[in-house]
Each structure stands twice: as structure tokens, then as C-alpha cells.
Image 1 (tube, one colour):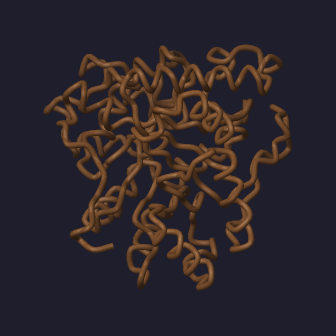
Image 2: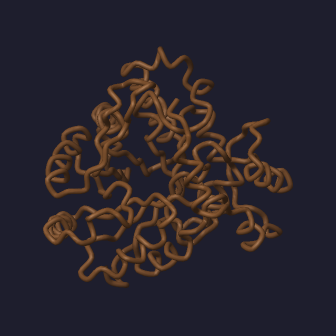
Length: 335
């Protein structure tokens, strides 16, 4: 992508309330399936036995309505987020005038195999092959009832064959030529390495990346700044570290407690401080909220950029070693 190509993103200053709304997106990872790795789901969603497809669809529609009326215009889904694409598609069908004002992103590369069970032995299965893309792309179109604006390879890691698969890359270039912004999401301690490899790819089809960045996992920051220089769309996921950086007294998490102390000094909630720290980066076009209740979404939208006393150096000191962070994340239970 050339330097002159348009890069979507807000123009409102990030520390104004309108700017926060324009910079936040709603992620459906926790809304499209009964089990996920975020903390506090029983408190937020009630008895797991009551999380039927119908109940989760109704809640997802309530959240999409709330996001719409609060000014959120970026929605993130994936083939593996349970029925997230179907829930979004049925909501769009019920509100046909809203589609043109939204930016919709989705992902391919994982199947949802949890069979709508909390205790499923496996919830997602990864496949980055061309045949899998060719199967999942039409499934996305059918589920959404529309073409997504952004389509990402889900969780690109150094082990993935994508960057060396010439046939798949050609297919992704063709999709990009049709007007879809093609990219990838990242996970794991080598996120920055993957972004750098994709940036160096000749005739790259990629102009978007969705990456975990939060106050406990800041390792991809330099690579994201370079992606920003290349005019990529940058979406930040897991800004609250799957609930570690949300209000949760008595959790015995020293890293989260250190963030909470700074949030209190800044007169913010922990989640507001964490989201504001992500929004503060000029390379962050969209920061996803993983809210599953309307109260959480309203709280997220009240976030603001931390005050000037909270320097980049001070916030950088909060980060864990990436291997430590991702080891903790991989051990989280699906609830």
C-alpha cells in the first residue's frame, strides 16, 4: 500500500468524549458464544445453563443497539466467535439503514467447534490453508448478509504458513483488489515479529492488522508504529487483558494491582485508564471494547487518555515479559 493511500481513522482528538466514541469498536468475541476466556462471565451473563443461542442472540442485539446509539461504528467478528457473524447479520437485517455507517471487520482461519458447550474439550480449531479460506469466505458473506469492509487472517503467528503460501497470497490480493481491506490478527509473544515480516512482504495484500496491546503486553508497539507509517488500519484488541484490567477487587494479581493504583491516581476506573492508555497512541485507529453488558460499554466510553503525569516511560514499566503474559493468557479457563 502506498503512502498516499487513504488510512481510515478518526480526526477528533482522542481526549474528547466524541473522540473516544469514534475510536472504540465493539468486539463480539465474548458475545457470540457461551464460553470465553474473559473474567466475570457468570456475573455478567448469568448462569451458564441459561446461555442459549436465543438468549445470547438477544443480548448481542441489545449490545449492538447500545453501541449504535452511543456512537460506536466499528464492529469486529470472526468465523470462530460462535454465532457472532450470524447475530450481527440478523441485527443488520433488522436495521438496514445502519450498514452504510458501519465498518465491519471479520476473520477467517479458525472454526468454532465448541458445540455451544461451556465444558467443550476444544472451542476453536485453526487452519490457515487456501481451501479453508475458500470455504470460510462465502460462509462469512452468508452469515453477515453483506461484504465485510475488513477481512483478517485470524491469529497469524510465526508458525503459520500464510506468508509463504503464494497461492493464498494471490487469492488475498484478488480480494483486496475487489475493495476489501485485507489483513491479519496477531497473538502470542512474537506479535511484533509477525507484523514486521508482513510489512516486508513483496506486493503485500495486507493493509490492516489487529493486535493485542494493553498495559501488561506492550511488545508490539514499535511494529504497530511502523504499520501506521505504512498507512495500515490498526485495531487494538484485548486492551483490558481479558478482564485482568477491569474492576475486580481481591484478585491477587500484582500486575493488575499496579495498574489499578495508577488509575486511582488519575481518578479513573481501571478499565477506563487501560482503554485510555491504548487510545492515546496515534497509531491506534480503533480500540475494541469487549463489553458484554450495556453498563460496561457505557463505562468504556467514559475512558479518557491518562493525564500528562503518566508518561510513556511510567506506563511502559507496567508491562510484563511477553512470554509471561501469554503463558498466563493460555492458562485462562473458558467460562
